Every structure is written in structure tokens, then in C-alpha cells.
Length: 169
Image (cartoon, rainbow, N blue to C red; front, side):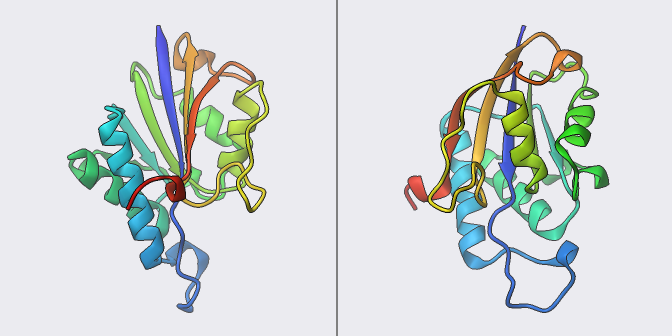
């Protein structure tokens, strides 16, 4: 059976407010980008069975805005503190435990999320203008055969990589 993994980096956060990293909210630009990504997912009919999110404010706010566009209740978001500041290996270990879900959306942070993308796909990933695979609010859609316990280095195929600046307002 083919499974799908959607990796979404949180949208642009607001550095103008003085607060700790965990509590930083989204900027206005980030809120718009999260909405565009959610709308794109809806238009592509890529509705996740499970949504895993870091509990950091900017990440959870990104996940909630995507849920609104998908017409999914925000209570469907599973916050997992292991996602905040996670390495690719931690994220991979977490994903191997999702059970029988066909499509999973993981909303997290760099560098762990980008490292996971590079680890899972055997091919070169195109970089954005700022030299990152996953700039803020970028979404990678991956597929792989087998079940989640078989997800491993080089086992996934990149279907598409969407960056919000490539989508219409």
C-alpha cells in the first residue's frame, strides 16, 4: 500500500515581539502563507488522516490555519513536544508509530524537517532563493510503499514541493 507524508514547515514567525522562541507567533505574511498552503491542499484533495504538530505557537498556529482551509476541526491536531527542536532521526522515529493512517501531515521546524526530507528522498531537492529546501510555509508531498514502520532513509519519493510564494493570494 502506498502512504503519503506531507511535511510542512511552520509559516513565517514574528521576530518583532520580544518573547522566547517557543512562544513566537506568526507574522501577518505567515498567516497568509499558511492559509494559501491549506487552500492548495484542499484543492489537491490532500486531506490528512492525521496531523502531527509541534506545540510551539507559530507551528500550532500554522496547523490551525491549514485545518480551517481543509474544513477539519482543530481538535484533530495532535501536539507532540518531541517535534519542537527535533532531529530528523527523532521525527522519523515518531512517524514509524502512526499506525494505519494513509496520509499524515507533519508540521514542524528546521533544521530537523529539512534534514528528514533530505534523508527520506534519494534524489536532489531543489533549493529556494534563500538556499533552503523548506523555507517557511513550504510543503513537501512524499509517497512511499509499505507501512509506516518501513519508512526509512531513501524510501520515499518526492511528489511535489510547494512554496507559498508560488501560489496565488
